Image 1 (tube, rainbow, N blue to C red):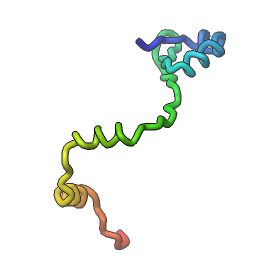
Image 2 (tube, rainbow, N blue to C red; image 1 turned 90 degrees about the vertical axis):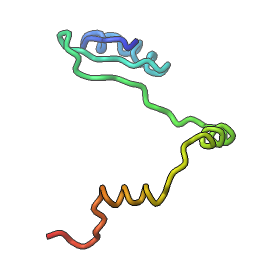
Image 3 (cartoon, one colour; image 1 turned 120 degrees about the horizontal axis):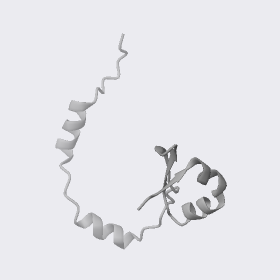
Image 4 (cartoon, rainbow, N blue to C red; image 1 turned 120 degrees about the vertical axis):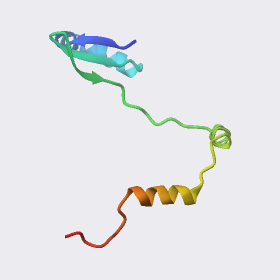
Length: 84
């Protein structure tokens, strides 16, 4: 469960908050009891073993590339000519 800190706690306990962030904890920051923001740890890049990745991809649904391209073309305007 995400902990809620008020403005004063954030200011007075910044060292504790930083240590908690480093360990993965996230916070909701409130002013006068009203949530005004979120403080979350930075997501670090994680090494994924190639065998784990291959196992996950093996069970992934197959992509119909022609259908995918048609969907992209229908959604995006890819005409390179100037609009004016």
